[in-house]
Structure formats: C-alpha cells, structure tokens
Image 1 (cartoon, helix red, strand yellow):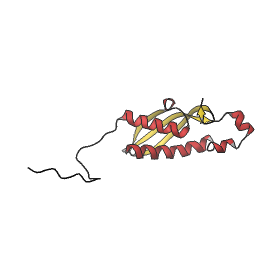
Image 2 (image 1 turned 180 degrees about the vertical axis):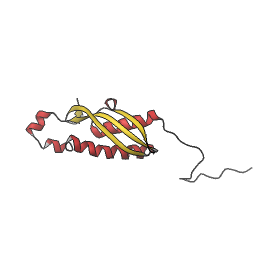
Image 3 (image 1 turned 135 degrees about the vertical axis):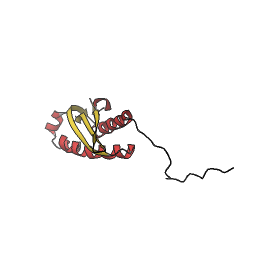
Image 4 (image 1 turned 90 degrees about the horizontal axis):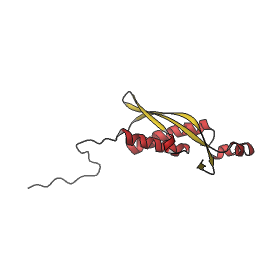
Length: 126
C-alpha cells in the first residue's frame, strides 16, 4: 500500500476556491470604512465586470473635523491627512491594494463617490 506524497509548501492542488460576493463586499466596505474614518454600515459597495476584472464602486461618507476647529486652526486639515479630495485619492489606492491582497481578486479600479461628511472629534466619528 502506498502513501500519498507529502505536501510541499506552495504546491498547486486540484480544485478551486471561491470567495462569495457577500464576503468580498463586506471586505470592501470594511476597508473603505477604515480608510475614510467612517462605519462600514454607512458604505455601499457594488461590483461590475471590467473586461474580466472587477471594478468596485463605493458610495460613502468621509470623516471630517468640526469646521469651527478648522476655522480656528487651518493646519488641522493637514493633520487629518489633507483635503477631502486628497484623502479620497489616497484611499482609492489603499482600498484597491488591500482588497486585492486579502481576497486575491483582481480589481481594475475603485471608484468612490463621497455622499456626505461625518464630524469626527479626536478621531471618533459622531
């Protein structure tokens, strides 16, 4: 009686793995929420096919400091990471990289539409 060959680390095996759309969506929402400082329940994520790759479309609010604090100290904008535009551009790249790394899915792009603002006092969204 023969025994099966020992598994070699990194060796390809028969079969396939699948990540459900729901799991992929939850990952995308959590990643976007972390990048933009909001709750994952406030993020909407949709997927479309983009020539065989996945395109991720997000609709989400973004956290901002209280405007009276910014008017008293304009440098506060840089402390939180810059303007809404700058933070969103950086978040797109971070979300694409994180979702790809954690899921193995091949994303072509991430589109973000900012739907509102959440006032954040001391790093906590209100």
